[in-house]
Length: 240
Ligand code: SF4
Image: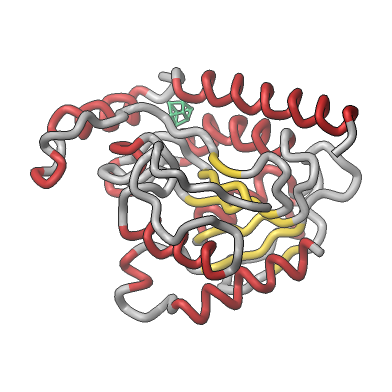
């Protein structure tokens, strides 16, 4: 890496760190602030000895990533407990094991913020940064939070593909960049949209859709490991 590249990377890392600090201190949505903090106080019995994070969640991964993975929102007892996106619940177990199989993570598990997990060529984030009751943010909460996703994704200079987990993330990504509302495409597993505009360049990243990695899908076989491995392979092909 040249000195110029190193300086550019340092600026990007600084921008992402500053944005993470802003996200983690946000209290814009009263209902979600109340819920995330109530969950953090009351805790699940299995985690009663732990101190929950109880704050919004910033994105995590490789600032040089070509692929961003966009989820719905933090899990109440997953990321809202551990403080890292998709970390500490069944959804994360499925996701990070798949990233490891694809060569995009250095280990197949994601337990805590200091577990040594490193991602390569992938950034993991969410449309809404606070755990919502019943995993259902309102449209107003989604719209309030999307500015963070936009700013975060703009700070990934090599971004080529946004992999959206579930219909909520797909719709949120379209709101980030679709220029013509009439061109919006309905969510479907493996749906693609090749020219998402509006993220800081003339030709924005492609969108790719997958069923969410939630246990409602993975425990029922709606989304299997081979299916998700194929989605990641397609994301890598689109990013090439
Ligand atoms: S959902 Fe987003 S905008 Fe709302 S309080 Fe959390 S971080 Fe802030």
